[in-house]
Length: 151
Image (cartoon, rainbow, N blue to C red; front, side, top):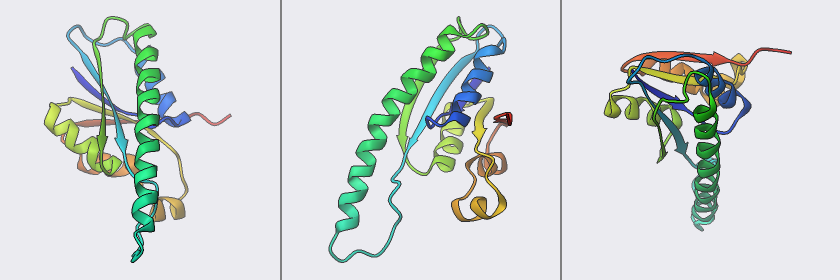
């Protein structure tokens, strides 16, 4: 089974990785961690190209974050009771997170995509978009959305 896990360094992402690590997977399974590098600077018309500089800084910060997030998630999986012997690969890919996950799942031939849910309300989800919702709608395979339990 090929399991693609979307990670972003958030607590919701950590919960999804922990859920995968605790579950036993069939022999021959593979896990691929994917971090989508995207600019956190909103797009606006910019005749002075100030936006371009800010966007480049944002991409550089995302690249640095991707390395640490992927290493941490891979370590969690290597120590997990269900994933100790499962090979783990990782990739940091530039693009919109929901598109990156769906496209990489199709390219890699994933059997399952696992993502965490931030649990945003209706208004925030409408304005910001929901990665998990878009992945569920457009994925070429099964999708599991792991929610963080409320305290």
